[in-house]
Image (cartoon, rainbow, N blue to C red; front, top):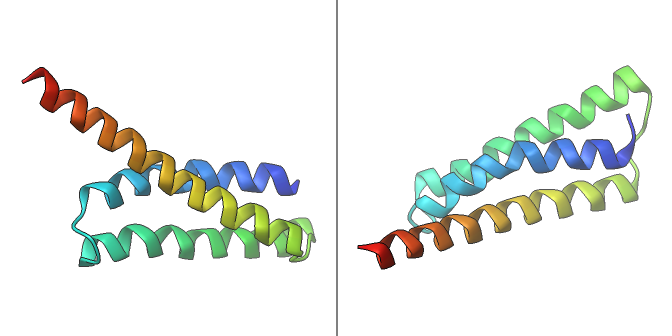
Length: 91
């Protein structure tokens, strides 16, 4: 599996958790779970990538995955807050 394909999968996997994180109170249990559950899933995905596709861990892959994860969390939060502001403006 290509590093960029893996980064795209990480983005898609982390995006819904970003919505959950945006709805949660800062540093609450739900907020922590919304960040750490996808991290565990991504680590599992990287291990599957290593053992089944024989692609080792590289710095490029790590940087791409962390960037994709953070971008997904951030964009989901921005989209959620804009939708919430739009809903409140309509009322």
